[in-house]
Length: 188
Image (cartoon, rainbow, N blue to C red; front, side, top):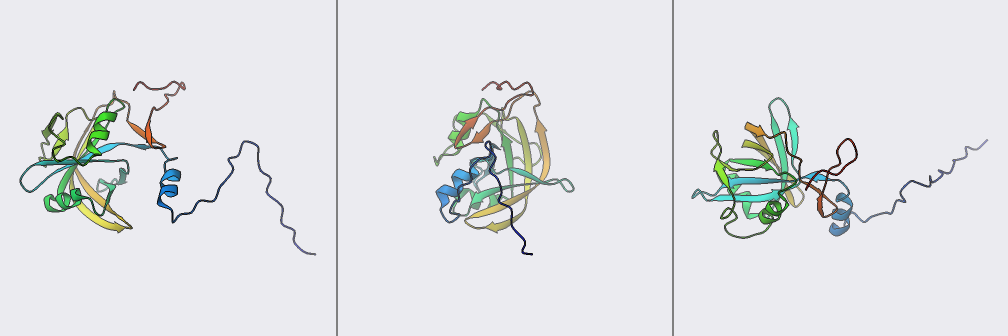
């Protein structure tokens, strides 16, 4: 007796799947945009001590022992050279009121720190954004090739956080609000 395959019934509330072409970068970016991420600014210093910074949304913890974090950076980014030369950096997690700061550091202007309040970290002396929700001072641990990006891994040497803040979230190409446990939007 032949085995019959049952047809999978579509549930009325189930999203219709549309096949995407993974070779199309725009389609891939749009589908990845369905996954909300936090937003942070990575800071380091150039060889002459000038602070450098750029926005990321790929930040993640990697290991508890030792404490390691990771983020992705485009292979052609001028900031990658500064990270490699310096060997250390900071990560500044932004709160829901800092969308303008995220946009500011996502641009390619020469002096991004002109109107930004910052100070040098106590351990590695890297630039820390004064009103960041959380900060990490890291030593460059390792980097790995990842297509057109580099996966940067940092060993955390110092950290601080403010628990009274709501994180800045990026979703579907724009900033978004988190919902609290009661289902209400957080303040922006």
